[in-house]
Length: 138
Image 1: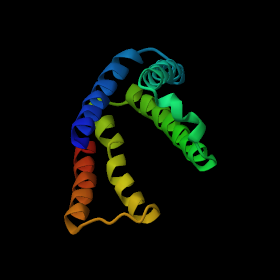
Image 2: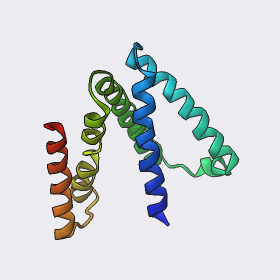
Image 3: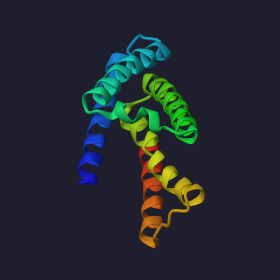
């Protein structure tokens, strides 16, 4: 079932790039990111309240909060740089380069989370990086 959610994530990420490229035309990218963030904030809290996710807020540990905050900072910086790249570049090039984060996440998961990667997984990471390089220069 996880792969259905992953495919939905990929689909909406693709729409994000298209909608953002249209929406940032002639707009400061930091302002665009701020507007987008407010919408996400409202949507995320609405879903959390509706689905009962806020019922367990008291169970959050200091480690949970620290790493969720760090994740939020990383997400915010990612969006700021992504919008700037979209404003000056083509979606067909910016989006694939942004998705090299998949390969980077796999590599970091091996080093920081001690996850194992199979030989086929290594080939996949190399292919993601290679494909991104091909797209950059096409």
